[in-house]
View 1 (cartoon, one colour):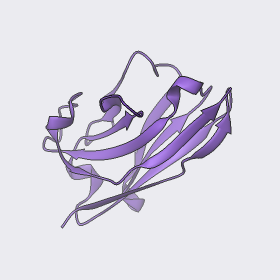
View 2 (cartoon, one colour):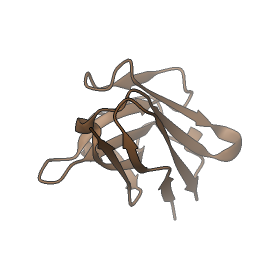
View 3 (cartoon, one colour):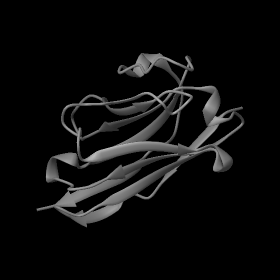
View 4 (cartoon, one colour):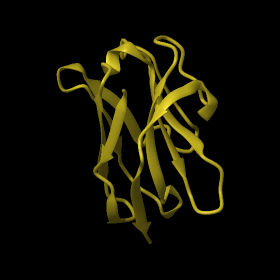
Length: 125
């Protein structure tokens, strides 16, 4: 049984930073490509960032490129999302997900097997 648990969300002012964490159990994060998605009220779940199993390959949506950084710590079996220069439009529930592939970063939700419950990020203007 794979479980993913996100933490680190909260309420911050625009321009500030947050770091989200995704702790995995039941499978090593290094066994899968990992992704972060977000979903705002009334909108579809959208891809934010992805990381291959090796950590060598990363991919970001255009809306967060240059501001967000995805990384992982194998020793802690945890994936992180460092979010800098936050904007009000970044407000959403953020979910981490474990992919079915080790190497391929998929940007659609259907490419992921396991999901966390999500953590709320609210950015005030």
